[in-house]
Length: 157
Image 1 (tube, helix red, strand yellow):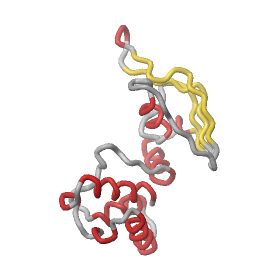
Image 2: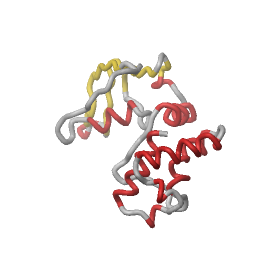
Image 3: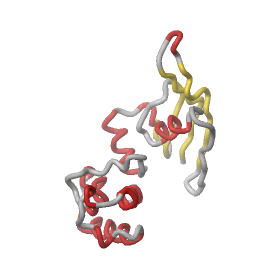
Image 4: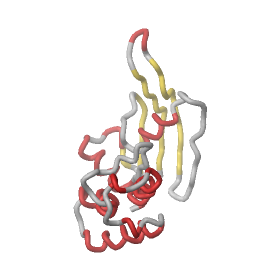
């Protein structure tokens, strides 16, 4: 479960203060799917960055499965991101020196653990996004759409 209580996020200061989020309350159960919608500049990306532990709120409380995310160290936030979230960024953020398969495996390479079984899961995810035939190719050898599909597979692992 994700629970946000009175979440605020401010950028700048003084006369240049911008309140990207102001008193957001939200509860999302594990089984629930939501859509975050709104006009440009309304705080959607800021909200998702906070939920994904990429950024911290200026004020308020954020709980993920009863863990006070707003209280965690940078190291603990990295662990939360690696274990609980998958991201697909606009620029895909693939490692140019790694193959498609290695890019999909990256969360587990960083997090440690048994790569043998995860390698098979990564191959299955590449198959799911119709990229198994490009598993050993580097990002520079892939089209933009193919890079996006590799990034989606990485987010799903």
